[in-house]
Length: 136
Image (tube, rainbow, N blue to C red):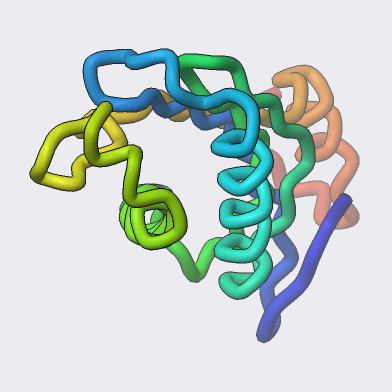
């Protein structure tokens, strides 16, 4: 699905995975349902689409369509920070599990681009109207 903003066509899809601190298995039951709602709300406010998503007891997988105006690191910082604050505000008993510092998520995350097949890109470049090509 191709999007556009101010003279730019884009389709930037990323696979991201992030985990609770110490990989604690706390994403279940009411916590899971509330966290899913919080994540959807935060991403919706940033105009970021969730292509696919899954939440396990100890990690979150998301496939996100992020506009090029946002850096992935900024999106992840906002997502992890705001979701942590909102979850702790709604469920203060989580402090007992996660510690006094109110840190829900581990520091890092995994990100990978979900792109087009290399051959599709090569064919696209070859089939452009302008016959000037870099490679024969």
